[in-house]
Amino acid sequence: MTQDSSNEKPWQAVRTEAVESLLVELGVIDSTRVDEIVHHYEDKVGPKGGARVVARAWVDPAFKQRLLADGLAACAELGLGGPETEKLHVVENTATVHNAVVCTLCSCYPWPILGIPPAWYKSSAYRSRMVREPRRLLTEMGLIIDPSVEIRVWDSVSEIRYLVLPERPAGSELMSVEQLADLVSRDAMIGVAKVSL
Ligand code: FE
Image (cartoon, rainbow, N blue to C red; front, side, top):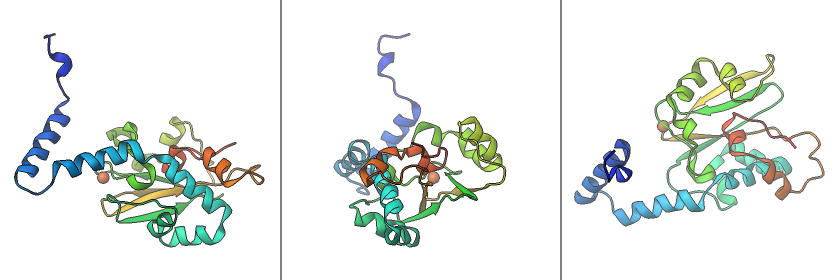
């Protein structure tokens, strides 16, 4: 191990920095703007935004209808939005259908609503197995879906991102919208977990 090995970056980071400096040199992008965007998604946006959307949909049927019809417009009502998502398709879990989201090509994800995707979402194992054997993969991730429930897998692309609207847990009838939002995990909005009390 050399003395400066701790400063070595993964090849992906080196490549990204090289591409960024080329694009800056060519005048395609502005590096200050890139830093602003990274900071925004790392520090200011997170799954809490999506959780607020889900909780609101559970308590407000008219909002839920708007959310299912046009995800981005409904999220904008709650002050959520921004670059990186042109169309947000919200898919609702029911007693007979369970939805899960993947990006088979890379790691497309509803950043403005959920923040930065988890590392496993970008792994090749998740990306391939969620398509090939979703039920088995979900079981391994701790989510057992009843055999009678249909699993629908949605493949994100750069233009269309997906958000799962999980089922509201039984027994939560008296909870406030803020309390409900605290129950909703990032994984439930990707479709690899359920919401429970
Ligand atoms: Fe992608």
